Amino acid sequence: MEENVDVKFDEIIGESFIDIKENGNFSDVIIETENGVEYKAHKAVLATISPIFKAIFQENKPNHQGSQVMRIIFKSVPSSIMEIFINYAYNYQLEIDFYNVEVLLCYADEYHVFGVLKLCCDYLIDNLHTHNALGIHSLVKKYNLPCTEELIRKYVLSRFVEIAIGSQEFLQLNEDDLCKFLSDDALNIKSEEKTFDLLIKWIKVSPKQRRKCISRLIKCIRLGLLSFDYCANTLSHNEYYIEAMNSDLSKNYLLDAQSYVKESENQMLNDVGFNFSYARPRIPHEIIFAMGGWSTGNTTNFMETYDSRSDRWFICTSNPTTSRPAYHGMVFLNGFIYVIGGYDGTDYFSTVQSFDPETEEWKLVAPMHKPRCYVSVACYNGRIYAIGGYNGVQRMASGEKYNPINNQWTMLPKDMHRQRSDACAATIKNKIFMVGGFNGEEITNTAEYLDTDLEQWIEIRPMLSPRTGVRCVSHNNILYVVGGFNGTNRLNSGEYYNLEKGDWVEIPNMLCPRSNFMLIQMEGFLYAIGGFNGNTTISLVESYDCENKEWITCCNMNIRRSALGACVAYGLSNSKYYTFHGQIGIGDLNKDTNEVELD
Image (cartoon, rainbow, N blue to C red; front, side, top):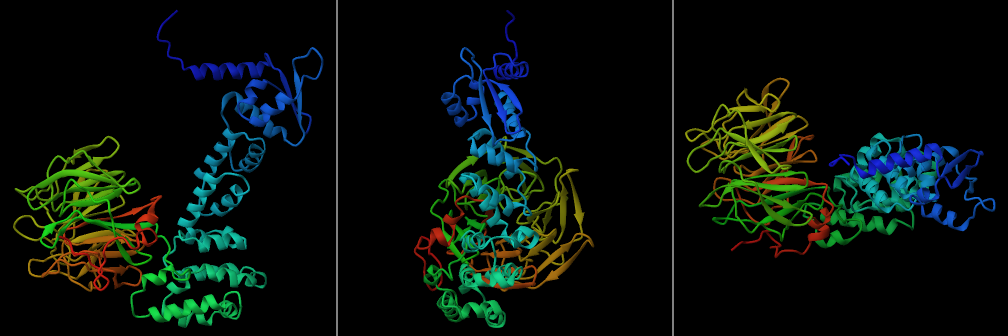
């Protein structure tokens, strides 16, 4: 017999099963469906896909004495479905489409054909979109599919506003389902004003019938988190709100929420008030992680997270133990936070650490080819780019990229046109922009981008101001550049680059000048975090509303720091842990300054 025959065992068995099915060899059961269609099959094979089939075969006997063939009649099963089940039993293959998935799911659930159930669930998950998510959620609720239902529920909660605006299914939601979604802490919605607007949109589809639900549904909205102006100018004049105020079912709730809004006007909300249902913040789906930097004269490994829904910073207990970096890079990619390079006052790092927010585990990954502090980092196409920086000897023009799949760094084939340390990088489409920085002799206003397809650096028009210690981010294909040091002053100015026109345009000034801070884009806001204001490191945080073009003050960090790293993490299964809901009370917060002094 010839050795090393490259044939898989399961392929041989599969082909044999198909052969005996098609030829009817050794068949011992005849399956008859509601319209009289008959299928020859094998009990042992069908029993493997369904415990109900197995029980039926065990309870019944062959039709004639001496015959080994059993006849089973399934009066309620269409022949098309039974044929699919039988074929699946022999080859474990199944074609599912939009037209048959619902009926397959129904009969697979009834007869416990668990393999087909799983394939149906996989199909629904793979084809989940904002226009069909609510319908699919309603479908799987009919069956005992808790894992699939939970995945779809999370999808709906994470994209609820998009679904409510663009899907007709939202308008057809029943009262109970709408109540569950609106009252869920994990509802991903930036403002309760929007939640109220969506509720009114739903009611207006059938106002005569649905206005009866207002007293129940309005209590799903965190009315205590509405702005005072919205309550005074919009909410109080709404006919459905007035109707709810006159209802014994909701009047007390609305009065309490109303009082809370008045008391919190012009002052930071009290954390104790967050415990009331009308003022409890939602769980954000995006969380800012800030780590490392200079604080009180030393580098620190201190990490904290920002919950935008409660406007609070919370201390993390899982700080890295191997280093205390400053002037490092920090990115979030594929569920992991990467801390790249940096400087601790003595050593310049080529090391790279990764942090898993779900397991709270730190580990070292492959180091860069070169030590880099003042490094600029960005992500594109599943790769991390580390560009420029200072290695302790010279400012660099080189760059390298990291592939997390094979845990390997590769040098970029071309250097930038200029050496840059303390610059900043941001990605727009397939371009990685580098702006500003220091070349060892002068602070520059130049900018260029890496075309990742051509692997070439291309210069663009210089910025309006020279900037080092500068920060930039991209939003809606616009490159925003803010702050920094021009050689004389720390800057509060900002500008953006218009890719179509190829020019720079000023934006409103920040409230506080700063360099060596972090700038993070999250949900249409640019968050300026910490930094150095020319006199001291700061804990101040402010955000820029890209739509309304204004800066507003946010909650301070727990410690003053500059040269920090920060990034946005999203899609975490344990995001609650890093927010108000999981972290309130952790850390010895100074109630007046909201700062923690480090030793």
